[in-house]
Every structure is written in structure tokens, then in C-alpha cells.
Image 1 (cartoon, rainbow, N blue to C red):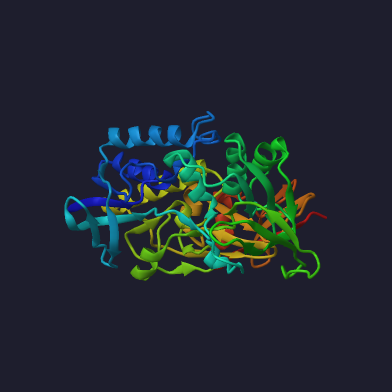
Image 2 (spheres, helix red, strand yellow; image 1 turned 90 degrees about the horizontal axis):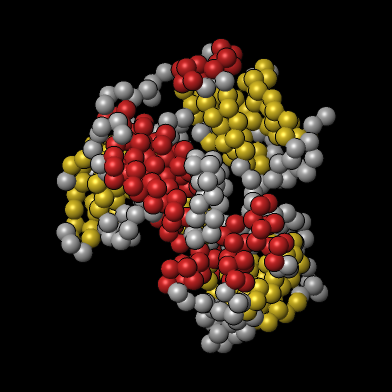
Length: 421
């Protein structure tokens, strides 16, 4: 099977990439392991999607349907119920499905949009017995919203990530009791709006600097043992509390899904867990692009979509021979209190032509006026004052073309965030 652009994954990044590429009149095949397009959006029946792109407050399925229709109108072909087995560095893709057996796809460009996955109990090594009743928050979300099952009646949720907070509200709607949300950090790990709308508005107890030290129960979870942690996240003896419950939900972070990327030999960033990309969302393999949560975990689906559009356009330009990957490259460096910066590299020509957007996350929250600076050598290129910064909330800045003239004799820029003077 041949196509100009193959997109692996049909979540918001994949749909946006496929549509953007097809609108440039190249052939596009989207490969999806589920039986329908939309990815994780289909189980996110809460609102909060599309505020930036559509200026409307949509549910996940509504948002997905709009992009599915756009993709169809643009002529995107889809291979559903199909699992990608491998992708080789020369861009051959091996896919299997119940209809065709094993299919070999030969695209001229690839967009990787596999999304991310949740950390499980095994990744956390929580002590105790192994009873039924321990789920990731996303699994519980699928059970309730798509399969129609309630995984329990009395919950403890570990982690203040967005999915955990949204599920706290969702389970409350369904008549369950959320006994506690526990967060081992001293600050929130999700969006503040989700704290307000899902936790505070429903009087669900949220405790910081506490974690689950033990799961108790034989056939089914009967209780969890909560314990306070110190600044190094070590349990503090004597602070244990037994919380009776029948279900433990884990909402303790997402990991970009990059097994295929690693097997292809794409250069990875340990800070993000995703591929190193440039301003076109191009990876270290020419003709291979990546977008969305496979690159780094986003807050909002609208930003995932924007990244997908960039990757899709870039893939189409590669097919059409309009690729702009050459020229001087500038590295972005995470400086003071910055955990990650994306893209990790950008072209000086691209900056001079249209500017470059940087996305970043901080290591520690600063709940007062804060200064973000971008410097090259000793020259300050960009400065912005923020009301506050929080690890759970991504920051976006726009580097304007005019600063490019200061980068002709350097190969990197450093991003710092600190309290304002």
C-alpha cells in the first residue's frame, strides 16, 4: 500500500495532522487501532474542549466529530482496527488487522501521533496485596463513559492530575463517594480550573504531601493506608491513616507513547519522554514528524491540535519538495526553574521569517509575580512578566523575527524563570 503521508494515531493531533496534510492535496492515510476515529477524545464526555479553536465549549466526542468531518471532506483515508507492529527508519510501516492480515505501507512522510499512556501501580511500586479494584483514572473513565460500568462505590484517588480530578467529579455524578484525593507534591499537578470545577465545587477532600503507602484487601480493595511525605517525598513514620474504600484510582502522570519512535532510532529528549523536534515538529529522521502528547504532555486539546496542524503541513511540504529543514539550527536550553522546552531546536531562517513559538513547563510553582527571560550568550532576547507559574500549567511564548539577528553568532538560547525583582 502506498500513500504520500501516513499518520499513526487518530486522536486530536493525528486528525489535525491528517487534515492539514490532505488540504495541501497530498494523499493521506490515517492508521488507528480502535474501530473509530477520535482517540481518547471519545471517552472524554466532559466539556472544556475547543474554547480556543472554535470559541465554543465542547465535549470530547463533539470536538472529535468536527475534525473527523473535516478529515473526510479533505479526502483522508483511514485504516481502522489496525495495529502498527513496526516502523522502519526508511519509513516502511507494518500494520495488522483482522481483515487484511499484515499490510506493508510505503509513505513518503510519516506523522507520529500515538498520544500517551498512564502510569500504573506497577510503575509506582505501591506495597500491599494485589486485590481487584485498582485502576488508572483513564481506564475508569472508559469503563464509566463508554462501557457503562461503575468500577466501585467508594474511591480514593492518588494524584491531582487532570484526569483524576475530572473523574472525581464524574464518579460523584454517578452516586459514588470520593473519600479523598491524595497528592504527594505540595502543589496541584493539574489545571486550576479543574480543581475549582471538579474538586472544590463538590467539596471533595484534597490533601497535599500525602501518598498511598499500602493497599489492603484480599479479593477486593478494602482500604488504603495514606501517609504524609517529607520534602524528598519519603514517608513520615507515625502519620499513617487507614482510609476504608473499595477502589483506588491512579492519576499520577502520563508517559508519551514512543516505543515505535525508539525502535526507529529517533533522538529522544529525557525531559519530555518524547522525540526531539524542531519548529516544524520534524524529528531527527528526515520525513518523520511527531505531534501532540507523543512529543510532550499538553494541558489543552486545542494546543495539541495546533501542533498536529504544524506537523501535517510540514509532512505535506516534505512530500512536495518544499522542506525547509536546512540552514542554521538553534538549540533551546531549559535554564533556571524550567523543566522542559519544546521545540528543542529551531531554524534561524524560520525565526527570521515568521517567528517561533516555544512551549515550556516549570519545575517549581511561584505564586507571585514572575519573570521569564530568553537569552543568547549575555544578550536578553525576550522578557515577559507572569502573574504566577505552576508545573501543571504549560507556558507558551512567541519569539519574534526581530530577535533572530542576535543569533547569527550563537547556537543556543536559554530560558529562565524566576521571581520578579
